Amino acid sequence: MKYVTYEAAGRRRVGVLDGNVVLDAGFDGDMVAFIEAGAPAGRTTAVPGAVLRAPLRPRSLRDFLAFEGHLLNAFKNLGRDIPAEWYEVPAYYKGLPDTVIGPDEQIPWPSYSAQLDHELELAAVIGTAGKDIAEADAERHIFGYTIWNDMSARDTQRRELPVGMGPCKAKDWDGSNVLGPCIVTPDEIDASDLRLSVRINGEPWGSDTTAHMHHTFAAMIAYASQDLTLRPGEALGSGTAATGSGLEHDDSRFAVYFANHDAPGSSETLVSAEVRRAGEPPEVHVGDADTRIVSDQLPKAIPIVSVEPLDVETEELFRLGIRNRA
Image (cartoon, rainbow, N blue to C red; front, side, top):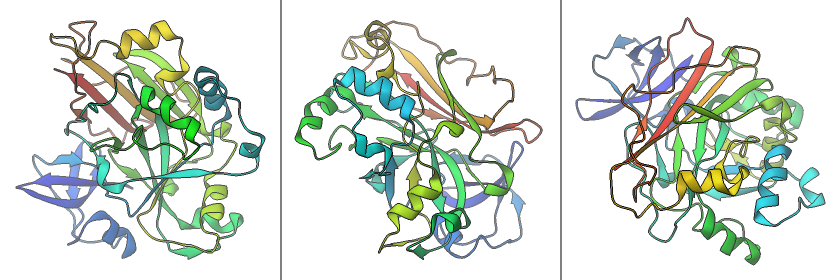
């Protein structure tokens, strides 16, 4: 199943994505309540004109660092080495649920940053509460998976890292976490072998597979649940896939994308992220036909998260596009 939160007639409700059609799930409550209730099968009805929103406001956001390839690339550009402890500890930081947005919402460019970046991640959503969950049992606690684009203010991050407290304002501002467009249930996918890809204006910038995750979602759940109850609707992020962020590219390529954001003029940039079953051919379509860059200088804000409902006949599971425009 592909579950969504949609808006119609000024109300947000839980829905099911059936090809290009949004069906109301017949549930009175938000997605977290729906998950906690066991995803009850209600009477479904098609919803004309439904607009997709972030699939849920998570109870909590925990973001891990599972991909060694990302760390090798990013830490080099941050002037750091991978600590030996990383290979043993699935550490995480906590984000703010109220910063989560989804399709057709504006991502403000934080006033204190001049270098904003995307991060391609997969997130697992907890479905069944548990405490001290054994790694062998952890996957039974997962309701489903969604895409997480963890926006990052890189210049701010460089100032904060030496303090040793983890990301602070580098990750926290209204609209800094983008989830969606849907939550795909585990029966549809093998989360240990998914292809994650990101493109900038149609140009491939990065691709990796969840088979390269050093820390699995099961290991993350086992670690986080030590002496602590994980509850339905909490989200755990994989951390950025290798080559899934601008930070990992050379300075000249990164600068073209993000520098000069205060410059006047009209600009538009599409960041398109997708997850597919491994081994499937890459998807060529990257978003709306009118998505384009009309200037090589970017505006002060990153508006619009653009999502298109997916055809069930394709092997693509979910796709999230983030569009920059003045």
